[in-house]
Length: 254
Image 1: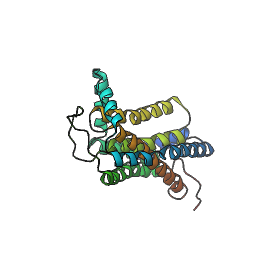
Image 2: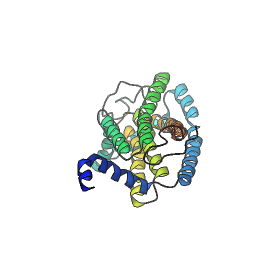
Image 3: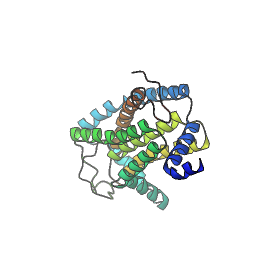
Image 4: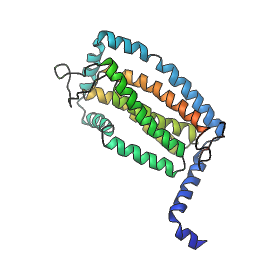
């Protein structure tokens, strides 16, 4: 037995990781209730996106946008500026691709194979939809004559791509942590960290002069809608694909 352990170190590590994940996963009925509750909340909030899109398309510039940008950029606190810049930096290329790859590998190693695949789809799907809406609305970004612009970007402004990515990708990871993990201090810390990333990315894009507040709000609302669809696809596929995965499998209903 000792010789077998020495000969299969990778298998031993994988087994240990799966056992740890099994111990942290909540029972199926708890996971189901959490998933349904969160999905309904997301769908209800997303209904406001259509109204905002019409306003942006018709008026092109909302007076409140400029006031909000000036208020956020008025802060001279070094820590605030560092946090705003750091959060946005995490959403730039290539670091965002490296982060997604590392998290996908971790989920797969833990035995969460379906979750691994859906996390990649969550990140990519939000970006694809965001680009499509941007080309449909074609709203210009804030200009230096109106606000302080840290970096000049040539792409369209509405809705914010950073915000949509953070909401779709980190929001899906938040959903997995909320619905799969048992209540524990580690779970709480994970939910808080992921939640802070989602909350802070919006103000950071305004602070850097990359987006108007309505761009950010639109991205949050559209991101909620997309995230709701991703969660629905995840739950639908959970009972049809990878039903025999090592950790957190679902009954096969196909």
